[in-house]
Length: 100
Ligand code: SF4
Image (cartoon, rainbow, N blue to C red; front, top):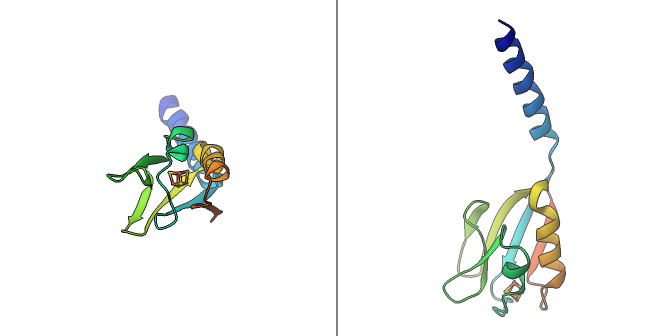
């Protein structure tokens, strides 16, 4: 009985923590990307090279992909890393927007 109560409280706490976690939309403009590799060296948790060494969002976070763009949804756990990659991109091909 006590275990069930503990599990219930733990689930409630976890759900609340997940609900309060911010979400961000990350986008790579592949037409602008010059395949320099800085972003996926800086933040391999979010970015990786595609077959042309242009950047794309890793499959864990990717929500859409096309010839021209790669988009993903990330949370706070990797937001600072994605922001650093955005800031260091020499051609401003990355955007990071808060969505929640
Ligand atoms: S840092 Fe910018 S230009 Fe370089 S690979 Fe990443 S998105 Fe492309």
